[in-house]
Image (tube, rainbow, N blue to C red; front, side, top):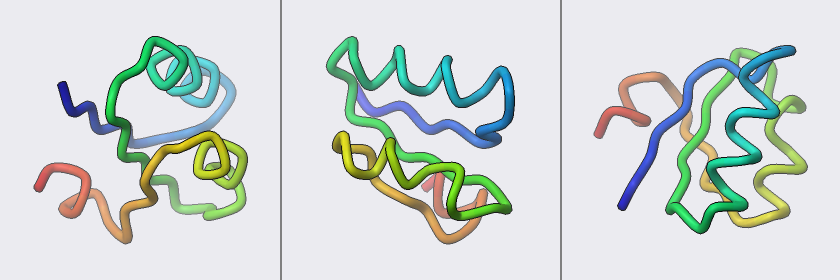
Length: 55
């Protein structure tokens, strides 16, 4: 299953990390790219826009 996550702040980042740990194919986006760097290193795909996440 593919999951998209927009917003990697105080709540979003841990939630996205748990989704990734559960084995889902995760695509993430945040206005601050550095918020998703460790998720990318763990296997998440970075999206360039919210529209890209939805696609």
